[in-house]
Structures are given as C-alpha cells and as structure tokens.
Length: 106
Picture: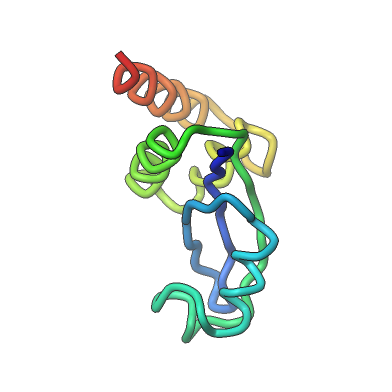
C-alpha cells in the first residue's frame, strides 16, 4: 500500500501535516469537519503539498520529521523544494530530514 505525507493550509494561515493512503478523500474529510481536531476549527483547509510515495512506516517517520521544522520550511521539504521559498537553510534541513529517514531504514 502506498502512503503519502500531506500538508494543509488552514483558514487561519497555519499548517497541518498528516499521513494518508488517499489524499483527496482525506482532504475532503478535513473539510467536512470530520478530520483532525486541529483542523475542525480552522476550516476550510487547502492542500499545499504532497510527498512522494512511502511505506507506512516511512510516511509516519517523515511526518514526524516535518513536524519538527519551522512552518516556512515544511512545504519545501514535503515537496522536495518545489513549493515556494528557497535558500540554503531549507536545502540543509531537507538534507537532514532525508538523512534521518534513511538512517531509520537501516
């Protein structure tokens, strides 16, 4: 089964990171007010980034790493540098995230 890490922009401008096997259905669930408690009071939400395909374990590990980043770095990391922003700090943090996930695979 293929798992993805996704990033939502909430109505208040904050970001929410989650894991799912069906991104479109999960975003719809959030917007129906049946998703995570965090997003229920911040509707509507908009999908801003989706990771490449992962195994379930790697997806949850990657989600954890993304949640450790600053808000302005999260989208870039999830999209592998293709969603807004740039600079050495983002590339450096993405390298750290990728390295951490690879180390967990060992």
